[in-house]
Length: 388
Image (cartoon, rainbow, N blue to C red):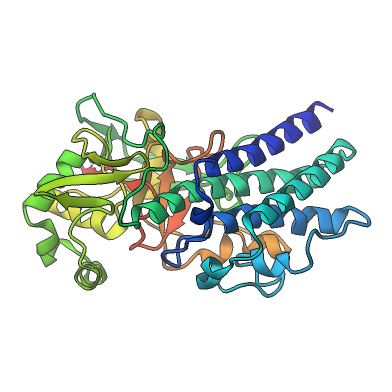
């Protein structure tokens, strides 16, 4: 019963942690959706609940009655094989169900799944619950970053709370770590949880390279800005150059010039930019342009994974030069859960590491995050590589 107790404890804590993230919000904050990539907090609360109801309770608990017959339509995200759903851009139009009703829904599903787990020792069920736990942890990170975007796009720039620390100061000097040429193993190999896109452990040949021991800092990025980095097309991909022109991009997201001084919006409100903190909310396009300006490059995801034990990581999701593709012998899970990762393996870049918004016990050195190159509402940064 130790496994069941541990799984149940993890499940209950995860459910509680999600609600704790929402605790500082006002009721009006729960429904806002400024852009398509940002989902309202109320929707996150409902979607993570629907996941457990849809994939476990409704399939494995005899006689289980859904909390509401229409919630599957409201809170399904992208699972085409499960059924119809609210269009992503319309999530912010859902004034109903109310916030209190969504919390009632959470309580209902949490209680039923707790009772089910207390009586069930099926490893297959436990595996599904573990996937659900880590799915909710992913949404905890999205909750924080979405909340920041919601508040950071309010003209009053309101604070989320006074305690969230998102800009760790880097004290150590920059150095470049040499990684010798060789054949290296890539991918998850061990016990414990991982996603299917980390599987298919395989060998890669890497040429000798040097990788920075630290992320690019705000003070470094300011030099790029002041040197006209956003005005020199030679540093940019054609698509990136079009993007900054069309969107009038001149600084990282959340940087504001106020009375002639650059400041940064944080979850603690508007603050001075900390020179020795890693730059954040950077797109792949911007990371690439900076690397070109420096005469260096971004690491591939394989170079990052091989070197990761030699530097600190976890304060920023780190852009890599790798496209998000399946590993050799990758196989999607059967059914709807096969839509979790595999369907997105096109037109996206891999990010490695984690961020200040990532939940505890969720990331690992083989974790592969992925986003489109222009996105930057996540806590994204980057480190540089130079060839030998």
